[in-house]
Every structure is written in structure tokens, then in C-alpha cells.
Image (cartoon, rainbow, N blue to C red):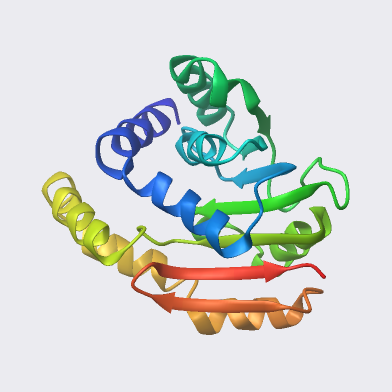
Length: 207
């Protein structure tokens, strides 16, 4: 597990780093939310949480179910220094049972973690539960934009010869159709599933 978490941290920093600020800006632009608490689900090494803190003045909860990944994220927050890093708290927890109060989060963002969720419907119900009225969630697996996606694919093919097959396998677990069916079974009344150059994203609103 430690080797896997360490390897993911390295890839995130060396290959995926440009993606996180783009996704953070997208979530803020589409939601218009810049205050309150943000939640990064499946934070991994915490780079998206840092990007959210840099783009806004929000307090950010960075949640991951892997305790080793949370430890590594903590190290990265120390490296990030004061300012944005000081507004991020780390939580070791599962998206299906988040230890967060109902209606406590203004903005939820998650990139890549939904491919590892055991129960999509339950996870979406939990996200909706913690969203405050007027809140929004952006959950998906995009690469920011088409240009970044192509750059990352080129780099990852050199690192992992099975990259394209791995992406296809993961993507098959959360196609637009699968996501819509899971959401229709959930208690989420308003949602949108996008599949475009920015990747596949589920947008939730709580009115």
C-alpha cells in the first residue's frame, strides 16, 4: 500500500499537476461558490485541495479512505506552506460514510475517485446529504481540457505501456449511462452528466 500511495503521489506531482488548478477553476466558475467549506473527495496527495484553497478563500476538507495517502497529503500541505495550506484539513474516511454534518459543505469536488467507489448511488446520496442548500458538486474523471488530456496520455504511455487499456477499463466502470442510472436510484433530484473535452463530470445542485 505504501509503495502504491508513494507512486501515485509521484505521478500526481510529475504528470497530473497542471490538471488540478484547471479543475478547481472550472468548479468555481460553474458554481459561482467561493465561500464556506469545500470538500475534495479522494484527495490522494492533496493537490486538488491545495488548488481549491488557492482559487478561493474557502476552508477545504481533503478526504481520503487510504490512511497512507492522507499521511502523504499532510506532507504535501507542509510543503505548500502557510496561506492556502493552512485552510485545509485532512480526513481519513470513506465517501460512503462521511463523518460530516448534514448541509455543512458548499462545494464538493472530486477527480478520479468515483472509479473506485463500491456503491455509486450511496456515494451520491452522501454527497447530497452534506451539501448545503445552494451548494454544488462536481464529480468526475476529466483531465482539465483536451490539450492537457493529450499531454498526460503521452507521458503516461511512456511510464505505463498499459495506460490506454487501464483508462478504458476504469472508464467502463462509470460511463454516462452507469452514472445516470446510479443517480436516478439515488435521492438526488437535480443532476447533470457531462461528457465533453473536459472529461466526464457529474454536476449536482441542492436547491
